[in-house]
Length: 79
Image (cartoon, rainbow, N blue to C red; front, top):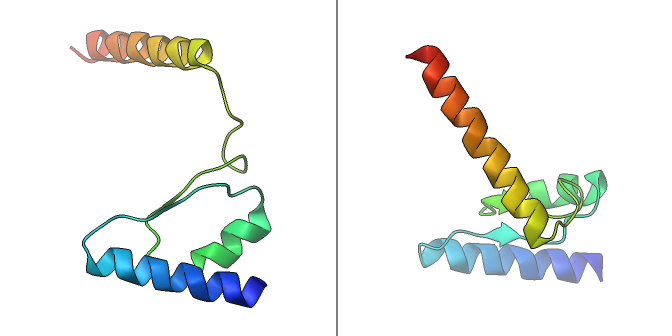
C-alpha cells in the first residue's frame, strides 16, 4: 500500500506541476511521513498536526490580532 500511495502521489504532483498548479499535502502527522513525502518532487508545501494542532475560529482571530499588534509595535519601534 505504501508503494502504491507513493506512486499515486508522484503522479498527482507531476500532473499538478505540468498544469502550473501548486501541491499542498495535508494530513502530515509525524516526522516519518514528512521525511518520506519530502522525497517526492513537485510538492510545494505540507500541513498537518506535525506542524501545528488544529485551532478553532476564536483561536485564529486571537492569533491574527496578536500578530497584527506585534507588527504595529515593530513598525513604530523601527520608525
